[in-house]
Image 1 (cartoon, each protein chain N blue to C red):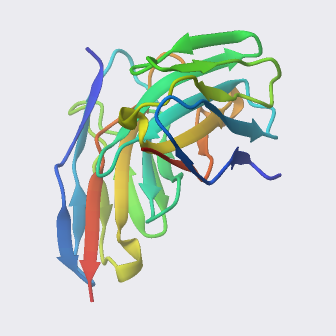
Image 2: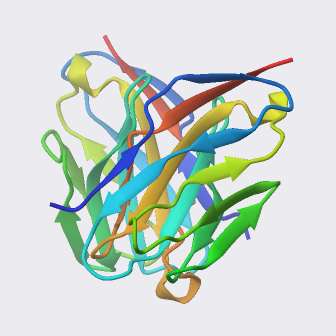
Length: 113
Length: 110
């Protein structure tokens, strides 16, 4: 199992540009999550999904969109990048069978200038 | 509301010192509890967990006991190493998602 994979690892965007952060898991987990981690801070939940076709907002959803067309993939879309979105983004997944232990991807470091 | 409160960092210790990082939570019922660790430049990974009251989770010399009376899940290690330098996050299982503490940065000096 590859676990949770994220692409790209690094990205620099100009203000107003758009991009999609990719996240894929091969553990057949129903639940998937997107977090952002600002320097020296904890995690903030952006969006989550409890299954294909179902998504819900977390603490900080503004400026982001998600979709969940398959169990494996949970892309995060930034439509109009702003400097406040400079952060490290982590995708995670979990399932009921493993007591909700979340498995994290390696992260995407995004800089908006 | 539901929340997790962790000991504020940063924490700096010498090698072989005893470590405690406090964690308390407010939640309904008896949720599963977790400690995650984040090494520099990496994502979070599970360190240990406890799924019911009085359970003790352990891994890599770290331990934490689920105390329902004090709603706590303090992380302990008897003798820390330089390689334990990382950020540690306490979390509990809320409705459909984990609730994380703010993280505690630990630095171990040789």
